Length: 328
View 1 (cartoon, rainbow, N blue to C red):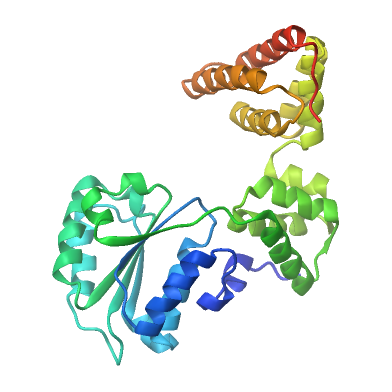
View 2 (cartoon, rainbow, N blue to C red):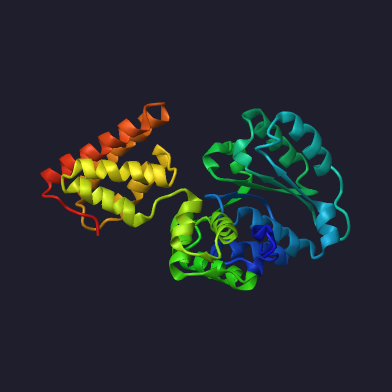
């Protein structure tokens, strides 16, 4: 099987191809029909379709690849984040008239929350001065990092994580078109790991298919560098039942077998504890307070093994005080 960049190969080309962002797409189709739009700000988690939607919107407005190439410019603000880029490259493109029978040019600034404060203030003026010839689409993960003067000049659209069923359908479609053998458990594992990030899900599918003849759960978790949820739940249950040494051994096996970092383990502990229906809410709250302290200490440079062992000890302590509950 040819090893291709599947994300680009299966990227939606028009707004009609994009799924599960209905409110956003409905508004953008209105802009296409009227051939007019304000500056736009797309905000949301990684892998939810912000860049793809910007490309699809430009494609629908311009209608041809020639006009798209002439009137659409995409910059990654994390690479070109300084004020010089705003004053030269962006300004030079914005101040020229659009090519062909199109209403305006489009400048797409991806990862705009990486722009420095000075660059954002310079961009604000350019957005004002050249609004007759150019529209801006800013994409970011955190809209709070965009200065208020820019936010007030934009129509803000928020993208949510892709629903699990939509991720599953897309993965199965790609796997069948590429002739990839897979199991249901393998697809479910990718959906679990991706957490609504479709880009990550497709990358995992591609990497897993290159490593094994069949994409199953074991291959997926090894590729992702994460433990199987059942193993994490087994470790938590052992601690809640007071078997600290057994839980500690399970933790070391997870970190050795899967090559997980302390922060990876903390993230999975958080997810499994919060997903449990049998752990009382009060106990969950106590665990989250302690887990946040462990996460902070690890981030500050504390020894991960020691901090995670302390976390297991806390699980033992709380398990005894609450009668030894277990995860579902």
